[in-house]
Image (tube, rainbow, N blue to C red; front, side):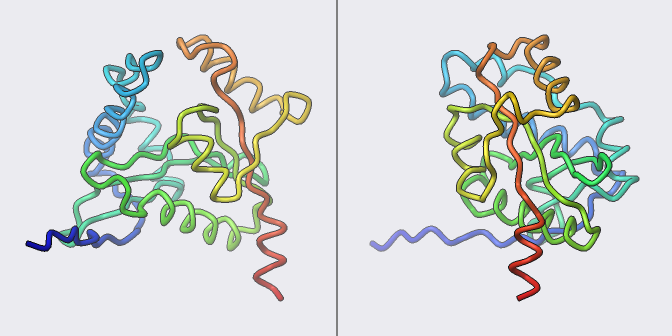
Length: 187
């Protein structure tokens, strides 16, 4: 018997205000992956990002969803613009949809949007050692920033995360330079 797993079909579109609760459910589903990391398994029981934060990103056009064939969200990326940068607040993919290319597609969508907006870089904070965090983003072209390269905004984010219970030194800030991407696209 040949058991082939069919790749699940999805599309990326702007998130809608009526989907905020679904986004929170997706984030909680995605967080269950942390049960496999003993020092971080408490994240699986943590609250999702606030509905207000999602609403703010949706209203400013910086929240996108991956939807299945019946237009139900199965993943999302929510961000905000700070001067010439766009910062990813959260990217989550519902557990049954992980490893289907959704995270990569959401990042590519964000990159194309940010290039159209003439932004200079994408930033985020994430776990350094968790395989689906910094190592994943590194494969996508993000670079870990050294402490000396952190601006006040990113330093504040990391400090706030430490205050929320993330172990000191477990998190890092990363950047994707859009200027070099824009240059590649213009040649």
